[in-house]
Amino acid sequence: MDVTEWLLDADPAIAWQVHRDLRGDPAAAAVERARVADEGWGAQLLALQDERGYWHDAIYGKHGDRRSVMWSMQTLLRFGLDPASPAAHRAIERVRDGVVWHEWGGRPFFHGEVEECVNGGVLAAAAGFGELGPGSDRIIGVLLDDQLPDGGWNCEPREESERSSFDSTLCVLEGLLAYEQAAGAPGFSPELAPAVAAARARGEEYLLERNLFRRRSTGELVQPGYANFAFPPYWFYDVLRALDHFRAAGTAPDPRIAPAIDLLTAQRTADGRWLAGEPREGEVFFAVDAPEGEPSRWNTLRALRVLRWFEGGATRA
Image 1 (tube, rainbow, N blue to C red):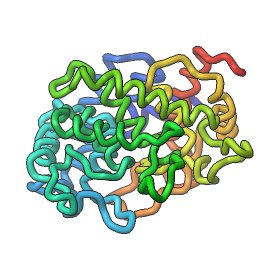
Image 2 (cartoon, rainbow, N blue to C red):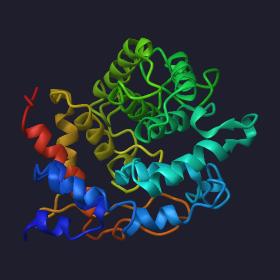
Image 3 (cartoon, rainbow, N blue to C red):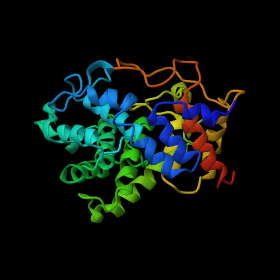
């Protein structure tokens, strides 16, 4: 089968990224991306926001519930919602002006809270949706202070663990990268850029030293879940998500990711696609990927663009 054509027969949130990352057609990508706010999943999710800026009256969601501001914003970000579209602009403005972290003294959403994995996601949303400023400066200060000696981060308090978490580290890295890529945008602080770049490099080294999924002590897979590719990933770590981060960073592939590439290609089916993994826990408004075990457009898109990047510039160790 023609996998690219199959991928294009999809929601605009997927199709525009196929044009950009697999077909190299920025004009078609722009046309398709413009549809995300007004058609399909993007429009459905935007329509579920209330006038105060909340989804399901929740900022984060209790007991794994994904129907909240945090996870709706993260999903829209992964859809590639254009913040300049009228519907997106309205939704982002509502969040900026109306959503607060009640348990943290009414702090505005884009100012973040205390956990690294949450703050990394909020920083990514602020950068992606044009809401940089004092809030993102605050988050960056917290993240820089919270980086552990081994180079990564952990949402557990430092007095409980001095060892980094793959999950927390990747959430932070995605936020730091999004901030760097927003250089020059309103609210961006050039004076923070060197420290952000250095922190991201240290955090990425933490993952690279472990081939993105291994224990340094034994070389074994840290957790079986790291080989489970589910979309959306929320705060959970998996190898495909990590590889896609390194691809998005735009640097040449480090040879130490080769074992992770092998893990990825081992899951490719005979027809050139990847299957959907076990969905992450929690209630959702609606599914945006195939059921577990069926061909997944999100996984296939992300895997193919990772392989294109890797094969274009990697030297195996």
